[in-house]
Image (tube, rainbow, N blue to C red; front, side, top):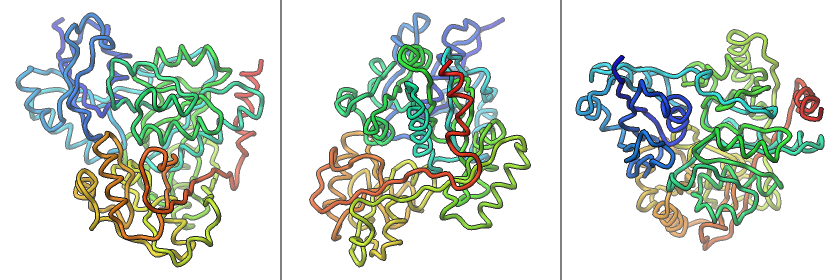
Amino acid sequence: MSVKRVVIIGAAGRDFHNFLTVYKDDENYEVVAFTAAQIPGIDDRGFPTELAGPRYPQGIPIVPEDDLEKVIREQQVDLCVFSYSDVDYDHVGHMLSKVNAAGADFIVLGAGDTMVASERPIVSVCAVRTGCGKSAASRAVVKTLSDAGLKVVAIRHPMPYGELAIQGVQRFATIEDLKKHDCTIEEMEEYEPHIVAGGIIYAGVDYTAIVREAEKEADVIVWDGGNNDLPFYMADLEIVLVDPHRAGDELRYFPGETNVRRADVLVVSKSGTASAEGIAAVEATAAALNPSATVVRAALPLVVEGGLEQLKGKRVLCVEDGPTLTHGGMQYGAAILAARQAGAILVDPKPFAVGEIAETFRIYPGVGDLLPAMGYGEQQMRDLQATIAAVDCDLVLIGTPIDLARVVELDKPAIRVRYEFEVLSGPSMSELLAPIVKVASS
């Protein structure tokens, strides 16, 4: 059998995991390149030999996805493995056609091929789209398990946007750890809330090595999934959030539908603000695709520092979580919702945007009167700071999960707003997790 030459089509996450769990040690395959999309600035580096192993003494190049067809032809590629998430089926279909026309086969690996087993119970929290409220739900799961007397460790879906050779296994227990690992804003948005709540969270590149480290200090592990990707681990309980504000996306986005079909628990998130029609639509989909799943309605109540009344009549710049607004496709977040409830006046930041922030608005023209907190690198963070400084407003309303003022210098008054998680109907979080608590406590 001849060795198949492979390109892994990715975005600095699922692609590396697929390589490490399926292709790294299989001599029937040679991975000649990764491609990179979605995340700016991740296609100017390579996958290092320290992680790739002795079969790849020069590492593996990472190239822009725009070069995929050229790579297929020049490298005589036999197989392309699609390995990123939160894209619609049209995108996946066009990618398939592009690969086939260039002369290669196109595949998507199944969940079973890439899930790693653990000796500890695992609760997985995933979603059908970016921006469903998954992070708030994950923190609620961690709190419930911790309140039951268990030692809980969270593992986050990968966000390795820096030097890969030193990002194999990362452990975050203090704010100083964020500085130690030179985290981007996007990374801090996911890690910091766990740390502030007193928890421990792991992330990195090598998720087999990561879970082995986490097992040493955990009674139970919570998989805090990213985008709408599938879990990296074999979970004892799979919780999946659906979004009634984007009803129908659970049938249009990859691999969100797969998550719905796999779920043990389906959480109809944002039920406190969604329309009755939206809630009914996603619950009908749940009943059709996965009738055995437990369905829970939940809300994401807003918490505003100092209360909503201080926003009334003020001209506010709303800063929201970047990925939720860009490839997540949302046009609002916690800050926008709080501003609307309080009767604040929204200031459009687009005329004031500079550098890479202006470029973000160009790439994602559908973003509303708000500022995505883009910070995948130092230049983006500088441009974010300069844009905020240029906006003529009374105050900055920060809807990101982190204390943005800690990493970006703000020249205006700032108020934070965040989501919490609240079950409205169906089993409580304690009831859902009771079997996990029993196993982990035995």
